[in-house]
Amino acid sequence: MKITKLGVLGLGLSLMMTSCFKDEPLNAECDIEQVILHSTDAEAVFFNLTDTIQNVLFADSIIKVNVRSTAPLETVTPEFKTTPGATIQCIDGDVKQGKAIYVVTSEDGNWHRRYELSLVPTMVTVVDTMKFDFEHYELDPTYHKFYVWHNVLPDGTLGNDWANGNAGFKISMSNAQPEDYPSVPIKDGYDGSAVKLTTRDTGPFGVMVNKRIAAGNFFLGSFDVQNALLDAMKATHFGIPFDQKPAKLSGYYKYKPGATYIDQKGNAVAGKTDSGDIYAVFYRNHDAAGNPVMLYGDDVKTNSNIVAMASVNPMQVTSEWTYFEIEFNYSKEIDPAVLENRGYSLTIVFSSSIDGAIFQGAVGSELCVDKVRLICTREE
Amino acid sequence: MKKIFLSILMLATSVTAMQAESFLTNVKSFIKPWRVDVRLGYGIGGSAPIGMPESIRELNRFSLTPNLLLGLDAHREINDRWGFMTGIHFENKGMSIDATVKNYHMEITRGGQTLAGQFTGRVVTDITAWMFTLPIQATFNVSNKVQLKLGPYFSYLTNRTFDGYAYNGYLRVGNPTGEKVELGAVEGERGDYDFSEHMRRFQWGVDVGADWHINNRLGAFADLSWGLSGIHQSDFHTVEQTLFPIYGTIGISYRIR
Figure 1 (cartoon, each protein chain N blue to C red):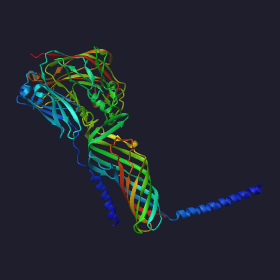
Figure 2 (figure 1 turned 30 degrees about the vertical axis):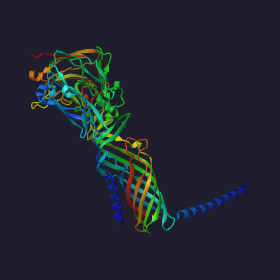
Figure 3 (figure 1 turned 90 degrees about the vertical axis):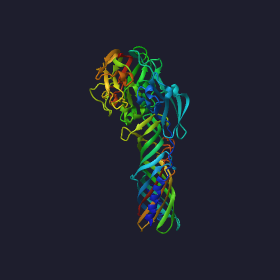
Figure 4 (figure 1 turned 180 degrees about the horizontal axis):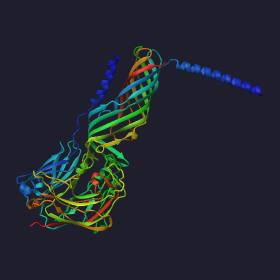
């Protein structure tokens, strides 16, 4: 009899624990996850049909799609894939005229995000030498915590082709000052401002996720902070579509390795000195089946779609600005028709620790870079 | 002179002895009506918010933890029906759960760095709370074998752990529009947390229970202790909901006098 009562008590407790779950809350997120650009004449609008599907990084709120200079934009209708339940409203402009502003509201109505979608008519690159002087930088517009850079586009406007891992560092070191991030500008470069990349300690959170250092990195492409903790190799998206055949890369650098090289577990590796890394990769951005190809941290030097590479090897330890000039070594022929249709992508990568992608290196390693030139050969 | 001193000493000694005797008699008569039981019990329960927030979706795992209770209780009857009980218990109010959450506020502070935001995914929480508890209870005899008891308790924690990790999900840093950071399942990919030092040392609440005296010596008991103080310090808001320890304990008792 008593035992039954005790049983009732136990049952009552477990019922109390489980019966009080409420209905699922409405979604609070309001992201555009994907844009599908429908067009009755897609081939006339886009360089590649795969451009009609644009996956949007969660941290991005500006979606720029390069289209042909003669693109009939009036044929384009965007379709948005948002967080389930979220609603989207165009508040300004019209994609058919090249640019529109949208506001996405979460299912629960409490949160909003503003997006800009633009279709940018893109001319064929006419200059043979691309200049990267790193003079245009600012604090990131959302958090004002770290620096972002802009490149000068052929029409004189500013682009966002240079990416770096500062957004990932912010997650581990939220209290860091902008100057303490791995990628920072310095005013007294070789010529005007330069980029300074420093391998940084990622602090207690870095230890938590076994990513104890953050190499300063700087590359053509984009950084997806979503993967910064789980699969850091997939956070670095290397490459931007490029319609010229690169031949040479030159510029100026300074390099000084940090004092103690540490492995992933944070143990000092005796006798090992850190090295910086400067290289460029040119690759075909679609596979044989026509699927888009992007290079990531784990295959940027090994992917089978790579057609040419150039690297500074070995790098010197130097406190003076040192000139480098490296040639692209082609392993495959270039298809001029694919090149013209932006079927190749280029990345140029600078890193203060050559093994930074696997979180090994020396805290304090420092690579400065300035006045980078990319020389292309004209295909007749 | 020596004689006087000795006689004073003797007098003093005899007075003290008399007083001690009467004191002992007093103590004995005070102790006499008290019955003393040793208890051994096991608790099942958890530290949970009162009114589950909608951000907690599901309980995937609830593991038994060593919630042992070792106690010594003294009981005195005031009349046929009513009585008074107090004692000292050493017990653990532990918990180990795995819950699914949606848009659940999390904040992790380490070495002065803070990572805060809204987490959707799974959260493991492990609590250990060994404590000394002083119950103060009124008792009511339902029959000569069964008595009910009710009253407050006061606890002091000697060992406190509140830790766990967020995994298989994602964090929106700051708020639902912030960066999305995926967390994996294994150490190094998930987000570990440890709020042990923010646990309150003193806790209090209300105990209700029943004692069943099987024979002169052996008994069984069932208690429900409902915490009225949250397990964390009141200025700690990282875990948004105040968690109250609510435990049911069953066990056996043995009368030693």
